[in-house]
Amino acid sequence: MTTRVILDCDPGHDDALAILLAARRLDLRAITTVAGNQTLARTTLNARRMCTVAGITDVPVAAGAYRPLAQDPLHAEEIHGVSGLDGPDFPPPTVDVDPRTAFQLASDVLREPTTIIATGPLTNVAAMLESPHNIERIVIMGGSTGHGNMAPLAEFNILADPEAADLVFRSGLPITMCGLDVTHQALATPQILRRITEIGTPLAQICHDLLTYFTDTYRVHFGFEAPPVHDPVAVAAVIDPTLISARPLNVEIELTGTHTRGATVVDLDRVTGRKPNALVATGLDVDRFWDLMIGVIR
Ligand code: RIB
Ligand code: CA
Image (cartoon, rainbow, N blue to C red; front, side, top):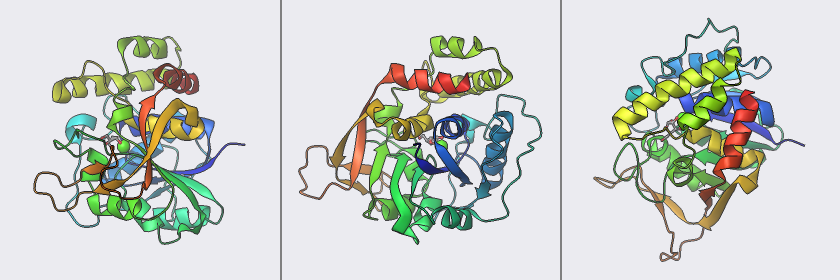
C-alpha cells in the first residue's frame, strides 16, 4: 500500500528528480507548483516538462503562489538557470496545467488523508493548512541544524518564505524536516552520473544532462565537487523511512534576526525546554538512496 501524497515543488533540477521518484514509488495525487528557484510561470512549465518526458500523464499539475507571504520573491537563477531547468533540451510539454489553483486541487485531494511533501518554499503549504484535517504528515526539504546555503544560517526554501515556514512548524501537524544535514550527503558524484548514463534511455539522458548542469553551477557557486540532490531525499524518506535517521526536536523559524532571518533554529541539545515539533533528519543511507533513485530512472 503506497502512501497517498501531494508534491509541492519549485522545479528546479532536484525537484524534477523528486517528481520522478514520487510518481514511480508513491500514490502521487497532485503536483502543485510554487515560486522559488524560478518564477511560478517557469516552475509550472518545468513540472509539465518533467512529467512529459517521464510519461507522468495521470497526475494533475496546478500552479500556486507566485510570491511569498511577506517579502519579495527570492529565486536561484544562478543555480537552476533562466528557465529553472537549464541543461537538457526539453520537447514542448504535452502535460497541461490543471484549471484549478494549487489550493483548490490540494483541497480536492485532501478529501482523504494525504501526506504533503514540500520541496520548495512553503507558501502553498501554509495555505493548505486552512483545511488541515486530512493532512497526515508534512515532509519537507528545507532548513538545516546549522549552516545555511542562501545565507550563512538560512537554507533557500525557508529563507524564500520564512513566514510560511513559521506557520507550518507551528501547525501542530506531524512534520519531518529533511534539511541540509541529510541532503548534503546525497551527492551526484561522477560514479552516480556514470550509472545513470549506462541506463541508455532518453529519460536517463535527460536526468544526466540535468545533473551535469547542476554539477557545474554547484561547483561554481558553492565549490562542491558534486551537487547534492536535495529534494528526492524528502520523497525517499516517505517511500522508505528506514533510509533516514531522525530525532524529535524543537524547531523555530527566525523571522526578525538581522543576519539570521530564515534560519531553522533546531534545539539539538534540548536546552530550551520547548516541545519537539518536528522529526529532524540527520542521517541518510546514501547507497540505498541512490539505488532507489537510479532504480526509478531505469
Ligand atoms: O536549498 C535547497 C532547496 O532550494 C532545494 O529544494 C532546491 O530545489 C531549492 O528549492
Ligand atoms: Ca526545490
